[in-house]
Every structure is written in C-alpha cells, then in structure tokens.
Length: 437
Image (spheres, rainbow, N blue to C red):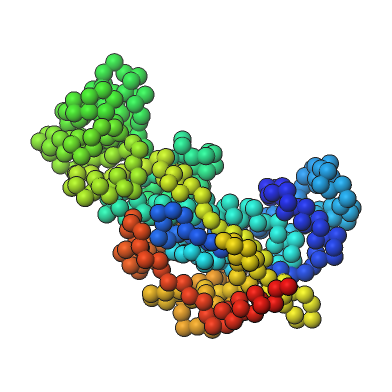
C-alpha cells in the first residue's frame, strides 16, 4: 500500500530514527480520544478493518522511494535508510477495541507496539481512518435513537468531502444503526443495503407527473418510492394515490413536513393505501428528526444526507496518537508522557476495563474483573483471527448502546460516563511527572 499516504514529518522522523540507530527499538503508541466532539456523550469506534488492512499491506514502491530522494528534507539521510524502506513491512502488535464499541473521553481506541519506525509511520493514516468512520457512526447512532424505531437511510455521498468518504461514510452509518445507504459501491464492497429510486430530474423529464409516476412503477414495481414535491406536493400525492399499487411509498423532500406528512397520510389511507409509507428527506438532522417524532408526524423513514455524511455539527474529532512507552534494552522500559497544558498525555501502555456503570483505565498487564476492551488484532504483523464482519459490528454497536444510560444516548448533554484510573496507573503517572527534569 502507498507508503507516502502520510505526513512528511512521519518520514523525516523515520529517517532520523534509522540514522540514530533506533530502528529496532520497540515503542508503544496509543491512539486515544482526547476529548469528545461537541454535542456528543459517546463515540462509536469504527474503521478498524480499513486501519488493519493498511498495516498489513504497508510498503514503499521503488518510484515512491525515488521521489523521497528528491526532497530537500532527505538530503542528509543515509543511503541505508532508503534501502530499509525497500523492505519495509509492519511486523508489530496491535490491540484495539472492537468496532461498534462505545468510547468516552480519555480512552484509547488502539495500541500499537512495534519497532519505532514501523509504529511512527502509520500515525497519519490510522488517525484518519479511525476518526472519520467513528464520527459518522456516532452521528448515525444519534439519528437512529432520535428516530425511535423509524428507519434512517444515509443519503450523503454527494455532500461527502470525497467520493471515497461517501463510500466509507455509508459503511460507518450502517454500523451506527442506519438501515442502509444510497451509495451503491458501499453496497457492493461492504454488503450495506442500498436504497433509492428517482430524483426530481426524473419527474421533470416527462410532460407530466402522472406519466413519470406510472413509468417508475413499471420499472420498480413494489420498490417504487415516488418523489412528490417537484411541483405541488399535495397534488403529487393525489396523483400517486390515483395510480395505486405497486408502491412502497412516497418521499417528501421539502416544505412543512409535519403538515404535509399528515395530509399525505390521509390521502393515501382514503385511497386504500394504508401500507404505503412516507419518507422524509431534505436538510434533516437528529434534532429535526426528534421534533418530528415527538410531534406525532406519521413518518416511516428518514433519508439524511449532508448532516450525516459530514458529521456537520462536529466534523472533527480530538483523537491523538502518542508515544507512551519505549524499550531501552535489558528489559528496561521508559515511560513517556507530554505535560503541556491542555495536551498532556498519560505514560505507559494501557488496558481499558468496562463495568456496568463505569470504566477503569489501567496499566497493560493489570488484572480486573471488568471486561477488557483492548483485544489483540495483530501479533508479529499477522492477523490473530478474522475481524468480525460489518453486520456483527453493527449488532455489537446496537447491543452496547442499549446498555448505556438513556441520558447518554439522548441528544442533550449528559453527566459524563465515569472513566477512572487504576491505582497502578495513577502511581505511574505521579512517578513520571516527578521524574521530569
């Protein structure tokens, strides 16, 4: 895989480590949630298969190495460094929480232990791969909870920051509880159920709505979802009702959703179409969904695009990837931590234990009667066992979220989930701070 898909300073540090004789020094890095994004009481871990696939395939092509040689930053790098890159592979260990696991501020999502160059270079990719899908899965979970049993479909590829982000966003949204996505490649690649029928351009391409609706029925049969607001929404619903079956339902994409959904429901019922469903789309977010549900609007499904595919209200996540431990030889470890204000880190490799009403962050190797959350994924650069598939991760997310207090699952700020330090970790933190010179 493209070894250059990283920040330059990862590679300049790699050259420095190599030429300083540190290339075989074992290092432990942790990818940790420094703080929760705005308006979030939890996050849903996502993106692990893509991160692991990257590590399993990470390498440098000859033309990539030739490119690095041309950069001024490597003018003083030894020839041995470039020879090293030719055979570069990840041979380390990775521990991670399973996809679909709720996480909170201060908790590690992944631990990487490897020769320091192998652990350093992946920083950029791992942060990007894990944080993006985690944001989308977490946003989806909020929307699904707000929908209170009504289906939510991810519609956001056209608003995603790249086409590939649309594919991964569709995957993450499904993991977070959406019933599916409009992105066909996400369906093909990951098995996510796909949804969609026609846009306004379909209606506009015919001389009248009735003809457009009839032709769509002929093509799609019982899967037909008629988009009724191209001209006059209520008149559009009446034309759909007059055509009758086959029909899944209608989609309202604009206007006063509370009023229009009620009037549409009455028209469909009076026409003998009580099974016809009503889907809403158009600038929806979890708050709009919550309000519509609370109002009793007769809505069966929501299609959500921009707000979900970009996690619009919280488009970035405060995750960090930091060195926490070094093997310095003869079985001796040096525990490392930053002390900078607002950016302090905690020393030593860790394990996260989950209990019914709190979490304990402990030192790696500690025992506890809680559930150990960081599990081995790679050992010696090899996959320990196949990762759970997307449907299993989705089920794990749903089951895990159901165990959280209702206040945390809601949209309003809630009392944070308690995350405490074990006695051993607290002691290590204190020793590390007192030893700084």
